[in-house]
Image (cartoon, rainbow, N blue to C red):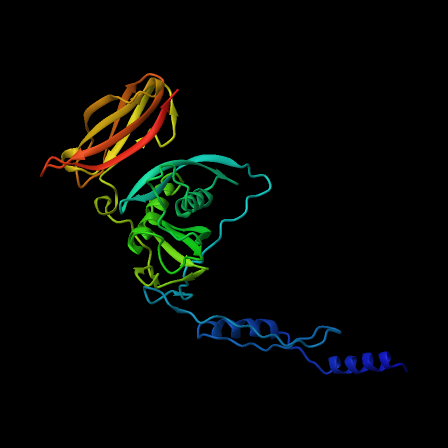
Length: 337
């Protein structure tokens, strides 16, 4: 007899010694159900059918905790994972969308709208593109606007956990490039909130910031990020006046609309445009503008204008009620084509 034949015979002899009760399988299932309610279950079962060798099976069931009403058990809650922006499917089409992006000027936040390319048009890609643009140095059209984040920072991924947006960052450095850590975080949060308004979610309840996939109690040791960060009231973080349109460097037609925003007493701002054809500097518009709301609310105004072809500088500001001085000037250079 060959070694293979001897081994086969020994195995067969062991199988022949196994006896399986007719009710073995129902009893095993009953024991699993009884022990499942008590916590960890370790099940060792042996069964044999015909010439099948007995098998040992070990089953582990996580410990369960009582539900809120004390009657329904549930698995312990785990933090929602940070899910990187998924690569687009082979059928997804790249698109370019216009999204709001926040920067800082004079320790206050201002907003621009940027055309951003997306590999696929979905909620996560929209927010990730806007945040990446906001945090990256040198992306603002207006040279007076800047990102407060260090050059090294990158956006690893974005995920939606209900109405909370999870933004996972990497290489955040030891602190912001400029300004305070609190304002830098609000630059990110304001961009997420504004970009989310262009998604199916519309309004969010906060932004959970993680670093390299892990939660951090305090970003840069200064800002509490142990829970979702909420956007602060506009009067605490936004610039008092800013020009939304025309944007810096924009080319507009002879008839166009000036779009202003601000948080000023009684919503009273002033609009002035300098420039003209042939490079001759002159004031072509100088008028008060009433915003839709006064401080502490954000007010807006749209002013239709018609100008001759040329290069211009638009200025928006408010006048101090205390001493009559010009305050909060925001200016953009643009061209009428």
